Length: 497
Image (cartoon, rainbow, N blue to C red; front, side, top):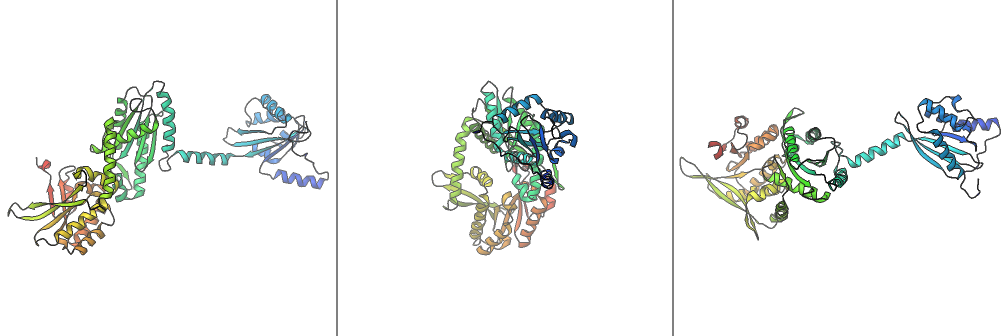
């Protein structure tokens, strides 16, 4: 062997029996399998760990046996696969050139070994076999976790993008795919009312149902929170996405039973199509997200395809959201009051506080335009607190027989700080509790009857009146009327008709 080639130092075995036994003890207690071959590819030494790793007997690896004989015995034991002659030629050629020969062995039982054969002076080599099964499994788990959602084990946003980029290459060859963004309706209310463990279990069940609705070649991902996404590939026509959306809604809307709670939810879906709407992953996802907002704006529980004008509407909405965040600090909100008249006496007995936004450039903004945004962003909580305090301060100077009615959104009622907010508003304003009437809708009672009723009873103990607003618009269940002694029920016109 050329002197300028890298070589390991020559291994010198001890000459005394005592030293030899000591070395044998050390080598046989190593965690690695160790083999030493001479320049003729014959075995000089094999430790006990190597025999254990491959299930061989002492007789299978006696000094003097050839590498080919050793491999034949491993073939019989089922711990070597491949062509032994090619393996030997590749190994010995590398050793002859002074190169370290590294490779990984994976056995039928799933174990993996890292094998390194390093040349030594004189033409032989030292081989070490290390069990890397657990390390490899740990690396695989880490790699899996990096691309999958920890709660549902669905692909996460990273893997979704990778698969979408891959599938778009097929679109460029003439295929068609859909990207769908999905959002559970009123999921925050479930979380607030029943707790995060119930919410997490709901997300797992929703993930399972989405998987069952799709094909193996499709991708279902969780983007975070209650947001999911689907890549529907190899579509025949864009209407296939609508068919899948209907199938998803039929599945998702079936009741869930979690920890004794029956939960009913719905889902909103936005759809963008490649190649019609975009040919890159980022605009496709963005367009599907805009279509999702369109579905939610249309009343939730439906699906919408992306339309170019949605981009313009979304920009307007984003501007409105940014303005809304500044509006409370800038004192742009004001209360208008709608009188409530008793039919028998024709006298005004209360005023209902109506929130209005006096935008510096847009003028009066309709509550239908900004209240849903406030609900989605959580701004409804500080905004609702302002409405309550302002209404109480104004109503304190009214005649004794005239009450003030204030609407509570579901988000406000689920806020654990509500009792403190109401108490503070009454105390600071000096308004008598019996002059305050809080109005809630039927939908609030659907979310968590026990927690909601407990809050309502606490408010009643304070002397505050509770009204059920818009009865008949959605659920119209008389059981709600029996569940709490409401002071007033406002029946919606559509119910009477």
